[in-house]
Length: 140
Image (cartoon, rainbow, N blue to C red; front, top):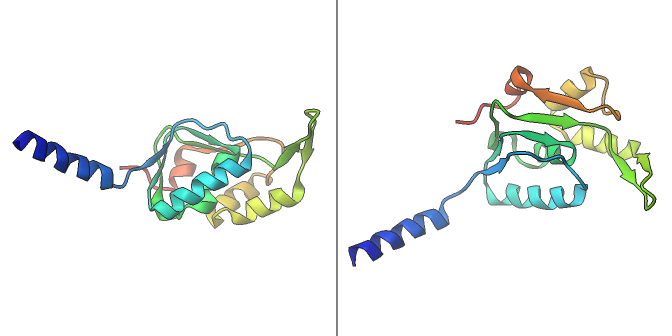
């Protein structure tokens, strides 16, 4: 009987405890699913641990989850580029208005870092290491 009570108490603790959302490796992708995911994370109150590459649309986490609920590990890398669309034939098109909107939505320190490197272009900008740790705290 003691084993069942202890197991039930452990299950109740695990079920109700807040968990971290850990980003291990995200190449990005279509914006919509990331917006849906990070909207749910913001509403949940969970902390986001960036523990590897978070590229392209994945970086929307910075705009959607409060800064005090984001931390980075030594493996974290954020990758930024201009918004683009792909048509049915596989051709890529620049989306300058979307790029401006995304840049404006990033927190000021991230936006400043991007602007100092020439802004959002087709070239991938990588924020990592000490520069990233100066903006977001290391995870504990």
